[in-house]
Image 1 (cartoon, rainbow, N blue to C red):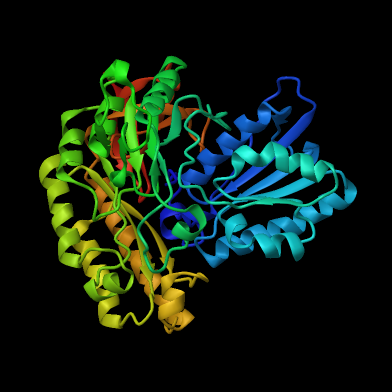
Image 2 (image 1 turned 45 degrees about the vertical axis):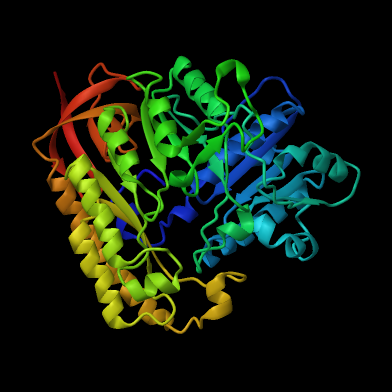
Length: 484
């Protein structure tokens, strides 16, 4: 889930989370070959790119932020919407021009698009030398050797065990304050519109011992916030018995660790280590998780709870596993346990198959009830291979989809402003993440509800906690000054 800095990030549908792009930073340890990665899509992709960089660093690759200096270019891709795939295709066309000038340059496609379109990418997109799916990154050294020998290389095998738990990620473009920790991979929820189970495979949870070790290491190196990542973090479940890694000396045989347990263990590492998580599936988030959040001040009070639609009938077609009423009950529990100031964010799809105007209005009315702090909003894009593509006609005209999306965007813009206005004339604890994007004279950070706050620099620096009195706001940003 991206951090929203500019107002346009909330109200402009072209700024979809799957359209955020991150590139590698410069890491030079003396290796001769240079790796450049562009990552598209969700934070899981960005986290995966850090794993790829770690694997290839051991194989003689340093990273570069200059694509012209690269010996190996990877696009780590997203397939969740047609627009995301088209963006990558356009980027490949651009890279084709670079490759003509530097024929020895190797180009690979990683991630969800690699899994879905491996044949087309290798046979039709002549520029691509290598294709590797999300579970095949350990095989990259061998795949690169195949390309070095003049062959094309591909591995899109989906694993039931791979979690990359033993690999220490290279933190790309890190601010040195915040970091992501992947706690699980894959998804067992077969939402009818979603391609993720097809491209990332079944759910498997990472060893909690390795998660805690990574979090402790990050804190020791000066990081002050970690975000636990998963397609559905609330379904995290790990046991010594099921994972066949009994630790008799620690007397943890058969111990089951759920997400609430894991969340608390990470929070207990140090009070100055903030903990966030994403994403929560509404049908799986439990009161146990909510009470754990309430118990620990350093577990941030912000939940990304994608609703997708406000209509129970449409939710059933989406195979979401809950109704409108059930979802609103979960929101009521969040407000009761964590308070009205807990940030709640969402994803919403306009114009899903057979959606009526009345059902669209149900989405608008649900937004008014929940009062989301912000949301990621899209119109429906049919993805080949999904249940919806197989079972339902994509029968809502594009113009109708765009009109409904615009109404959702306008409603969310109004709600975001209202929610931010609640924070004016209040003091917020902020973790400084760096200099504001708008001015070198200002710093920025986020409060517990994941809202960006900008304030004069003074003599403060990133990594510090400060109290900020908020004096004004826009739909996306709070502005204030440091107070004692």
